[in-house]
Image 1 (cartoon, one colour):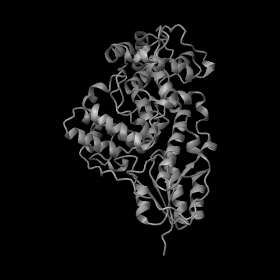
Image 2 (cartoon, rainbow, N blue to C red):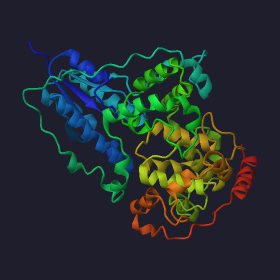
Image 3 (cartoon, one colour):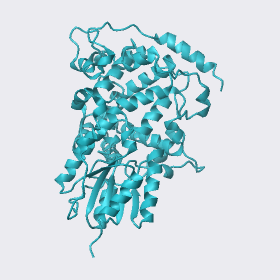
Image 4 (cartoon, rainbow, N blue to C red):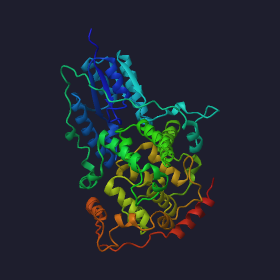
Length: 472
């Protein structure tokens, strides 16, 4: 008797290799039918991550076609659409790889229950993380709240070797109907910015693997030093691909382990950064309030500004604060869809401390502008910088964006690449910013570069005064 089809629900795992759900579907036998669903969680994404997801889905569909398969596109509530599609196909099983944010967990739990009620096997697999959040515990059986002990707990754990891509994907005799990706218009909110950001995108599994290979071959040895220099191409740049599962963390981990065994000094630092990502998911799983509220609940009383209409918030978003490191980083994000990690720390510290604005304002701006947006990393990064989160910077650590620039961009390679107003022959990337931004901002490279809206010393004093006099 022929094995019934297996539906593989594709989400943030746009790859063929090291894909546990896809491998299990092939092993089960029978036709394998990949499906991507546009539901309210997709529709709720910000402009840049939704556009980048659309590019990734289209590229993954092409990769499946090269294997003689297809990606079926449907839209609607997963609780109704997935069970109905399984019935339509006569599928005996539905497999997918896990998500960990609370909205996805609730959705997936409901879908699994509905499938089981109808007699369809429903199974979820690991793959977006190396260490499932519930498997990492302190000696007291609690979850970790500080990164360093978390790192020490997992650094010697075994990580399964990545699986090869299936050599073939059995197809059904007749494919079900599919919606058209272009009709979804996932990039509509990007407007003219899409053409500016697109050259900086490294799309798909093959590009991600090439990025990893180039990083290990030529950059990882100096990674512990160069990763802090925003004017140097010293990082892996893999955040974009990890966010959509175009490469797995296990593939990165094993490449880093090999580099460390080869004596490349920066490899351990790279592994620690991968575990920092795991730590963010660990915290999101155990304390999902990190996505919406102060992780340190006592910070609810802190007097942050929450009014986005204020002039300083607008200046911050537009990269017009008059603080070169801050403005360069924000403009980099608008042109490339990503921001150097050192820039993220400076930008976040300046908003939450010098400008005394709520971290949610920054977190939501990143959520709209980043092609490498990741719910756990974005939330933890902002709360870490603000002081309200786990393993946070102490309240008295207020980054001075001027001295930070002198330290990490001494020759101003970074600033000159992203700020146009002060240069007679601006860098093409600095000019690209003005082609990407909304016309309503009415900004021009011929504008006079602004004076600081809040000077570093003044902002630091104001922040420290507020922190020292807080009511908790």
